Image 1 (tube, rainbow, N blue to C red):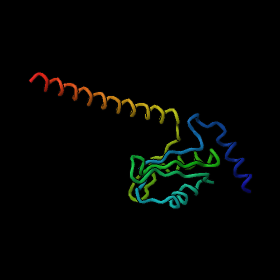
Image 2 (spheres, rainbow, N blue to C red; image 1 turned 180 degrees about the horizontal axis):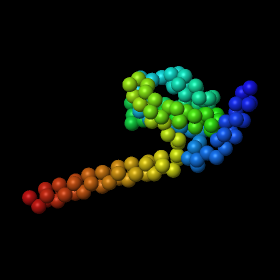
Image 3 (tube, rainbow, N blue to C red; image 1 turned 90 degrees about the vertical axis):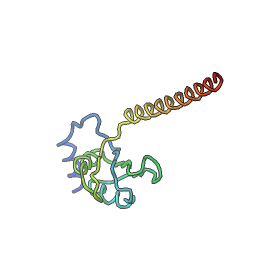
Image 4 (cartoon, rainbow, N blue to C red; image 1 turned 60 degrees about the horizontal axis):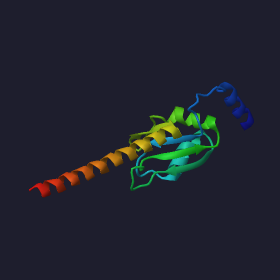
Length: 133
């Protein structure tokens, strides 16, 4: 019976958009949610291979990566859980897109570099002002 289910899923959705993949990026999670609770929620849409939750003390808290064994299960989870309310927060469920994450990381690094350069300029200006006085 489960074989029939998976073959019907494949035939009805044989052409998936290119951004669809097995890895989901979940944002806006309640900070108190546990991995077990996430498995319970996301497991309703298919076999979950892995869940990686963000660190509790860093910028990644309230986020998680959910990896499904089947791409169609991942698609079902995105379709049903985007905007789903858990603990008073509405989930944002997206397909993981490595290129976008890489661009974001590069932008953050460049922003940090600009901040450091501004600090150096301010220090040099302060040193010049001291010498001129």
